[in-house]
Each structure stands twice: as structure tokens, then as C-alpha cells.
Amino acid sequence: MAKLIHLEGTTLEGGGQLLRIAVGLSSLTKIPINITNIRGKRSGGGGLKTQHLTSVQWLGQASKARLSGAGLKSKEITFRPNTNSNGLQVLTDVHIKQSTPGSINLVFQAILPYILFSGSEAPVRIKITGGTNVSNSPSFDYISQVLLPVLAKIGVPLIDSELHTRGWSTGGTRLGSVTYTITPLQAALPAFQLIDRGEIQSVTATVLAPRSCERHFREELEVMFDKRATHIFGSREPEYDITFEDSHNEKRYHLLLVATTTTGVKLGRDWLYDHGFRAGKVDYIISSIVKKVASDLVAEIEHGGCADEYLRDQLVVFQALSKGRSQVNGGMKKAALLEPSLHAKTAQWVVNEMLGVEFDEGGACDGIGLVPGKGLAAESDVAADEELARDLERLNIQ
Ligand SMILES: Nc1ncnc2c1ncn2[C@@H]1O[C@H](COP(=O)(O)OP(=O)(O)OP(=O)(O)O)[C@@H](O)[C@H]1O
Image (cartoon, rainbow, N blue to C red; front, top):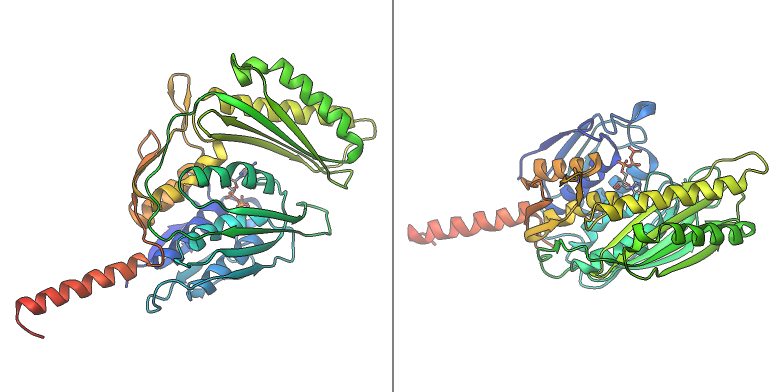
């Protein structure tokens, strides 16, 4: 039985991501963990919110873990996956229902490694209910346009995403729902290299706003692409596309810009504006949203790396589980390597504490090469059995 690993929840970013990665890895590798001061750096006292609790409980059930302390607002949990069960649970159709608009995609982020490495042979359809566009979390649009294509580029079988309904973070009564269809890996994920950024080939703008704003949004975006053409496209001819969806809500505005490069890299930035504003201010709000998201995208383009700030932390767990040396070029700033965000450093800290995987400054690490369907503890049990059999043979004992 592997040793219990303690993780202090206030470390670095000290938010929900530390918990999600740790519990996801524990359920996969069967390494038991104890987390204290969960979300200890968040205002309002920290502890588990619905979205975190949903993920922990689902992973607990899937890996037949002994779970203690899990409840709304709880600040300490102990998660002990069942090392006696043979392999991981085989999954087919999964429905995870949240009763609040907690981020669907943070639940997805928590359980994706488990499903991918579960060893299940058939595709797994997973439907999640909650919020599709929630501040400080990946939107449905970011997941389907950035994360999933990049995962496919690094060797994960293409994950299909289907949006049923939108659900907004605050004030909305309607919950959103999404189905992801995942084809689990049948062998270890080979090491991958995201090093060569290439040139920016095209940009897609996805706008969600009240229908009455469509013309204005399109005009603002066209002016922005014209003004910033050199910053975005360099010497290439600007190539962009704008799609518009009615948000059916006077207070919901979301813009995502995704740049695709000649080497298939995706860089995304977005902003969700979901506050009220005074009458007559809508034009100002639209132009502020376009300016802000465009500036953020230009900064991502200028660092020359192969992952935007968010993707960089979301790829850490896949680097750590892959087989061999994987690298993600995070870009340069002022002639030095661009530091990972606090979220990325936190993800790197968790994989180091649990798996002993170390990242260098260039964003590279030696992954453990996890074999789908087998926890680490199970693998070491097999190795121990084999060693015992060799000893018995040497001593001539049958
Ligand atoms: N605009 C965005 N686009 C894509 N991903 C995002 C965006 N904003 C945040 N993320 C991702 O969402 C995750 C947020 O983790 P974090 O620990 O802050 O979340 P949380 O569970 O909501 O916790 P807390 O409430 O404790 O902040 C990170 O993986 C981050 O990269």
C-alpha cells in the first residue's frame, strides 16, 4: 500500500485546481492523499464548493475510494483509493448533475485524466450539467476550440464536444449542459513536444451577446483586426472569422479569440462580462470587451510560446503522465523565459509531491508513463510479486 501523501491546500495558488489535480491523480495511481486547508487562499473561508465536491465524490465512487471529510465547505479530506480492486472501473455513459451553475469545465478538468487513463475500451460519453460560461474557469468555447484540439495534437484521441444548453455563472436560473465523448487511451501517452510555435495563420472570434449587439460587435472586431493586423498576423495576410450566438440575456457578453498557427498551435483568450450597466453604456461595454481580449491575445502571441497562460497549467498533468520527456514552450518575455503562472506552478508542485515529476525552467519534465487501467500502487504490487517469485525460485521453493 502506497504511503499517504499530505498536501497543504494553501500552497502557491491555494485554490480548487490543487485539489482537482491531486484527487484526479490519486484516483488514477491509487496513491492515498490527505489535503488540508482546501482552497485556503480563497476569500470567504475556502473549503469545497459544489463544483469541487461533485468532482471529488465522482472520482471517489469511480475509484472505489474511502473518502472522509467531503462535504460542502469542508476544508480537509482524505482520499484512499481501493488498491484491492483489479484495475480501474470500466465506464460507459456518465451523467454528472450539478444543481447550481458551477463550472462544467472544471468538473471536466478534474475527471478527464481518470477517464482517459481508465483503460476502458469503449468510448465514454459524459454529460455534465452546470455552467458553460463561468468567470475564472475555461468556457465551453475555450475547451472545444483550444484544449481539445491541442490534446489531439499531443496524441490524445480526439474528444468530441456537444453543447446542449448554455448556463451562465451568476443570476441565471437555467443550467447548461454539455456532452463530451472521450476515447480512452489503450497504451501510455507518448511524450510530446510543443516547441515550435510557427506563424499566426488565422484567428476565430466567437461572440455571445444579445442579438441586438451583433452588428456593433462585428464592426468593433473588424476595426480591431485592421488596427492590430501587424501585431497579430505579422507580415501575413489577415485571415479571420467571426461567429455570433445570441446569449438571450441583456447582461451576458462573452468574447473568445483563438489564434491558430501554421504548426497547429492554439492560443486563446476570452472575457465574460456578466454585470449590469447603465442605459446607454452598451457601446462602451462592447468596445472595452473587444479591446481587452485583443490586448490579451496579442500578449500571448508576442511571447512566442506554444500555450497560452491557461493551457500551460492545464497541460501539466498530461506531461506528468506521459511516457518520456515532454516539453511545452511557454514563451519569452524581455529576453528571458516567461515564468509559468501561479496556477501552472501549483500544478507542477502537485505532480512533484505525488509522482516525483520535476519540471525544468524550459517547461520540460520526465513523465511517469502511466499505463492505462493500472494504478501505480497496483504496478508496484505486480513488481513485488515478481520479485518474490524470483526469490522463491532462487531458493528452490515452489
Ligand atoms: N479564461 C479562462 N480560460 C481558460 N481557462 C481558464 C480561464 N480562467 C481560468 N481558467 C482555468 O481554470 C482553472 C482555475 O483554477 P482555480 O484553482 O482558480 O479554480 P477554482 O476551482 O474555481 O478555484 P477557486 O474558486 O478556488 O479559485 C485553471 O486551470 C485555469 O487555467
